[in-house]
Image (cartoon, rainbow, N blue to C red; front, side):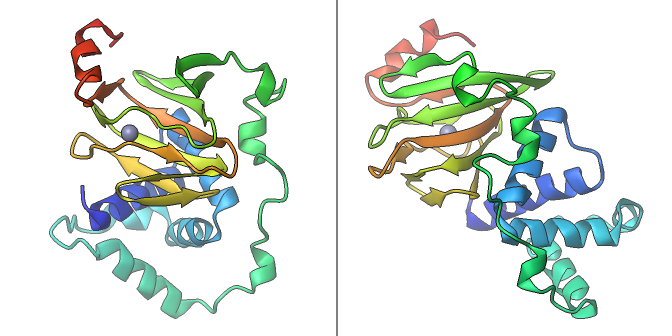
Length: 218
Ligand code: ZN
């Protein structure tokens, strides 16, 4: 999965949401993403403006990796740029869609330790094997090196993390799959809190941890 494919995968999530075709976990992820990220909000609004019916009639253009970018450019050409004040940044700690999933607050969630410095809490938003959860990586801590058995979508809510593919801060969405191996490391400025949607457990790839894979829950 290269940079273009990652961008495409993020756009596909926006498109699914705009068409009402996303799963409940992806719905939550996209609603939170567009609330935190002005660029994602702009792309999402363009897709909504086009309308799902029209998009359904567009010939599949899988051979053109920039097809969605060209679609956005066409849409932008027909619409005056919106004033910045129409897209205010989310002033709340968490957007409304996410707050609705944790009425007792983030600390009341069923947190469990994944590894040293890393905790996860399920949000009870699932669709088949796909589920949404919060992940908290303590400042400076790392998630063990791993690859993926399915798609992994990670939206940063607070703090930041860095992996082999870039640095991600509040509002940034990282998409990974089985072609990506990485070791996310939280920034040292504070804990990194993320909203994560996964459909299968990760597969550890570190030299020692690889030995533990057969014994980990699947
Ligand atoms: Zn990962």
